[in-house]
Length: 59
Image: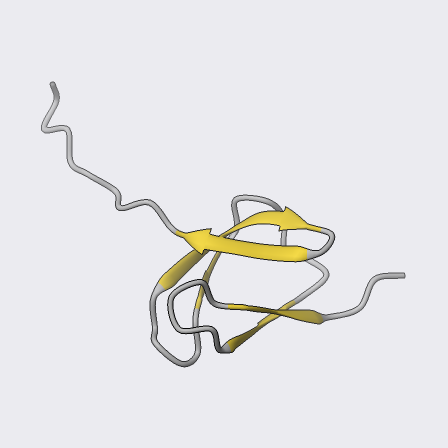
């Protein structure tokens, strides 16, 4: 059984909670600085800044 854990935000170093239903590539929002984070590793939980989604305008 897995339990909720925490990790730190790479932007502000505040604690960001994780839940057992999260998976790699899940996007979470830092409760402190509100930046979007992507989960890049689960054991231990590790975050990276989420990539910006860019419009391709059909190109």
